[in-house]
Length: 254
Image (cartoon, rainbow, N blue to C red):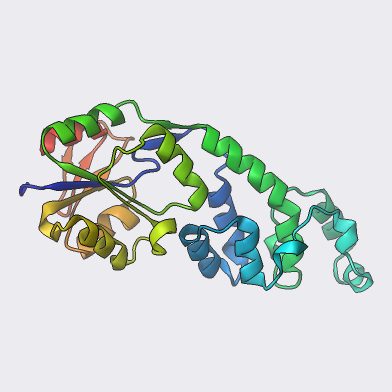
C-alpha cells in the first residue's frame, strides 16, 4: 500500500458499538419509507444542529410552539372519523410507532404521536454506546507511528455526545455531517477533510464498515478505502479495497 499520512475513520459500527437496538434515527428513517419527504428529512436530520421538533416543524411548516404532547383524540376532526375505518383507527390510537401511512393526509399526527418514544429510545441508545475493545489502543498506536487520524461520519447532532465522552480530543480532525451540513456520499464532505488537513487524496486512507458510504464513496473520491467487516476473521485483498475484520488488523497492513 502506498504510504499514507492521514487515516480517516467512520464512527458508528466502526469505532463505536451500540448495545441498545432501538436505533432511534434509523427507525425514523425506516418509518419514512412511504413518505414523500423521506430524502429531504433524512438529509436535514443528519446535517442540522436543531432539535427534532424544530427540524420537523421546518419540514411540515409548523411552528415550534405547536409541538406538545396530546392525545390522539384531541387531534381528530369529525371528517377524519369518516375517512378511516374502525380497525385502522383503533390500531392508530393504540400504536406507539410512527404511522407514516397517513402522513400525506395528516403529517402532524404521526410526528407528535411518537416524539416521546423517539426521545426515550434516543437516550437509551446514546447511553448504550461503547468503544469496540481495540479502538483506543489502535488509535494510540497510529499516533505513535506518526499518522494523523480523523473522524468523518454521517452523524446527527445528538450522537456527538458519545464522541466527546469516549474519545475526547483524540482525533486531529473531525468532519461530522451535522457540523458541515453535508452527508456521505457527497464528495464535498471529503473536500472538507482535505481542506482542513491539507492532505491530498493519495495520502488519505478511509476506514469504515459501509461498502456504499465508506468504501465505494472513497474510491469515487480518489481515496484508498479499507472495509471493516467484523463478521469476517481475516484480511482480504480485494480488487478495489482491502477488507479487515478488526481495527487491530489495520496496523498489519500499513
